Length: 147
Image 1 (cartoon, rainbow, N blue to C red):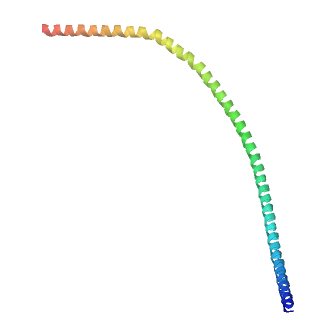
Image 2 (spheres, rainbow, N blue to C red; image 1 turned 180 degrees about the vertical axis):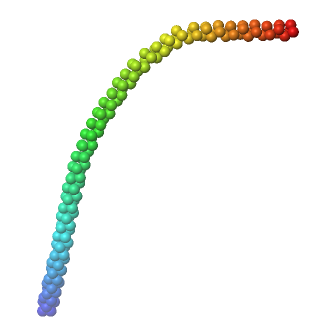
Image 3 (spheres, rainbow, N blue to C red; image 1 turned 180 degrees about the horizontal axis):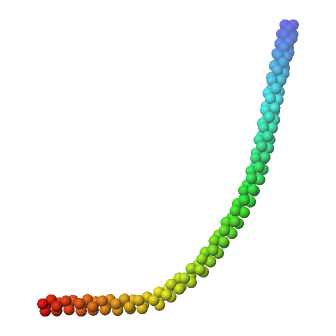
């Protein structure tokens, strides 16, 4: 009989312990459920934040793309204008060269025609001048010697 009572008491203690364990597990799973809900909510908020950020970045990229297209278009037109300007400058330089070239040729021609006779004339004049100087020196020596 004692064994029967011990078994009944042990069974009651075991049932009470299981009841407390089940109550504890219910509270534990309830807090675990709240924590999972909180994490899920945080994940959804993070997802929404990422979506908003990506939408803003997408708008900024679209705006940047439009501005970049405009800038590249302006760069294309500017490069075309620069090319035209350089072609115009090249034409003007060619025109100046065509004007300048005949003058250079003319000056070389005139120099070739005028320089040799001038050089010959200057040599002749220099020779005559030296001869006159020598003659004058000789005459002045004779005049000094005669006196």
